[in-house]
Amino acid sequence: MAIIQYAEIPRVEFTLNQYTHPTQLEWAIQRINFLSGATNTGKALKLALERGFSGARGGHIPRVAVVVTDGQSQDEVSEPAQLLRDAHVMLYAIGVTNLINVHQLHQITGNPVRVFTVESFDQLDKALADSLTWEMCRTEFRPGTPDIICGPDRIGVRASTKKPFDGFVFVMDHFHQEECRAGPEKFPDPKSIGITVPFNACNVHRYRSVSEDDFEFYTENIPIGKHWRQPKTKHLKMVID
Image (cartoon, rainbow, N blue to C red; front, side):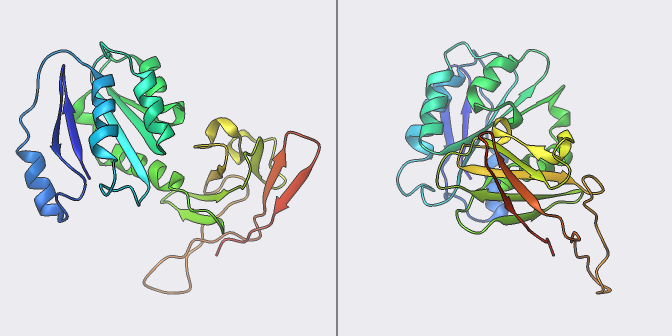
């Protein structure tokens, strides 16, 4: 984890891998002296690309950056954000208070699904952290065999394609239910596809395990379909145990 704080001028508080123990990380965060002044998010994004995601500083693992802002950027954000996305950095944005510019946050992430808004810093709590963590883990994409992601109230499937996919991923027999399908606007990129389905929707259920000391989430013959916009359809049948 690394932190870049910014106002008019961005500042690297600490870099990736500088602190490896949670206690050290918490100590470093508590020592940060907050900056004041204008909001130049674009400069911070440029610094993140130059200092945060270069070479050995985490380039071998999935790259994720979270922008937290309580105002409107005074400089341009689209170009530096695009450069980060071109470098395979997944961008998320959290806007705090009603002074934010939601359009700018969409420009930063490139996808409204990765934009979160709250009314105050007090709402930056565990519930938001859990939601953000779920979104990050759901889109940390590994090529090859589809991955199954279980959450406290939902289950997800993610996979890769060799070519850009222009179509829908859906639960078989439930294509016409909006919550049971996902299209390109919800995919992190055209070759990373997946779907998240709440338990008890789309005929997906959660059951208690036979074991007395844990739970096992599984569905009973829930096939996932891949449907191209062109006139051809392929299906991937999957039972989640």
